[in-house]
Amino acid sequence: MDYDKFIERLEKELVITLGCTEPIAIAFAGALAKKHVKGEIITSVEVLASANVLKNAMAVAIPGARGCGVNLAAALGVLAGDFTQGLEVLSGLSQGDVDQAKIMIEEKKVTVGVANTLKKLYIEVVVRTPQSYARVVVADEHTKVVLIEVDGKLLLNTLSENETNQSGKTEDSFITLDSIWDFVQRVRINDLTIIKKAIELNTNVGLEGLTNAYGLQVGKTIQESIRKGVLSDDLITHAMALTAGASDARMAGCTMPVMSNSGSGNQGISATLPVVAAGERLGVSNEKLIRAVTLSNLIAIYIKLKIGRLSALCGATASGTGASCGITYLLGGGKAEIKAAIQNMQGNTTGMFCDGAKTGCAMKLSTCTSAAVQSAIMAIEGKIIQPTDGIIERTAEQTIDNLGRLANQGSPEVDRIILDIMVHKKVG
Image (cartoon, rainbow, N blue to C red):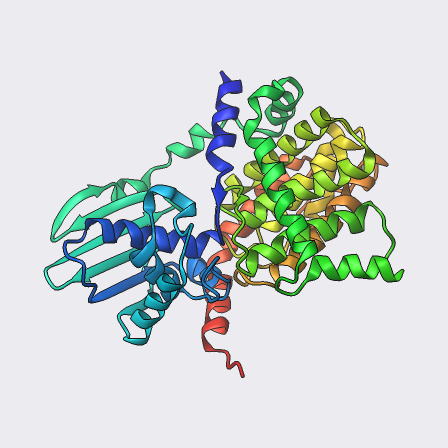
């Protein structure tokens, strides 16, 4: 029974997405609201979102738009979005669509505010015309619609039960480090089409980022430093370059889709590409690589279940931990070494804050990728951070529980401060 549950979970959490998922989720909500409103002349678009969503949607480029911002994402969703495409809602944007959205913003028809909610992932969009209005709420997951209201009538409302529903904890109880390991050993490769697609899509975006100039060009800079002899052409730098290159492209508005993990494209990238790069250098079989990437993505999912889809902690630390496990597997490690890699990663990268989605995320992915390789090598050599140190406990599971405490109990104030800094800083 758990076999099918694991396949279902992989197909739920690994989703193709075009662009950073927070602005895309805003566009999705806007497109759905527009579908329900009567009339074609839009008089206003109101967006209320949680702090975590806002900080991730403020500064990241929107694919095909040559711009960024919560207001731009909302306007594009309303004017040109196809909500049936999910996280690819803004596929096929035209320049005319972008121009119209910018005019709507200039005319001050789009307003943005902070939602009064305890939810970390919350988006509310109200679209108005002269004769009608439609209100859509997305919460907890990037395309999970929990409320639709049209002209005073509720077409859907699961928001209140959603706020108190704890069933997910029982629902996810089959996912443990031991069960993940067992699944990876016995899963049929033919059942891992989603993993094969993740390898294909994310590798293509990584190569795109290494070929053309995007964002901070973190991947290209690493690659160029290798050519100059400043850095060595080894497994770590190869993994860092490919992973950072994909993030460079994605965060700068590349129109190529990626496979996300737990609602984040960068997490999908950093759970996949370090393992792919390591597999290339180690010359492993295609089957072993697919199993390693499966292991990596499932470990990332397991950690994200503990810390939440959005928190004050950088998600690359979770996906980087998954990558470290995948690399450990490629190096010949078993279950004990994989748990050791988790301990090493949490003693290293824990504490990296998420200060919003932006081009600089490529550097964080590069850092976590380097740590992933180093932690894997240490684990293979039997060198493990001890439970006397910091948040590290006797078992990897207990350590991850501590990480969950940091994320869930420590996040609110950190998020508030980060958003306050981002909103009030003076640029230029």
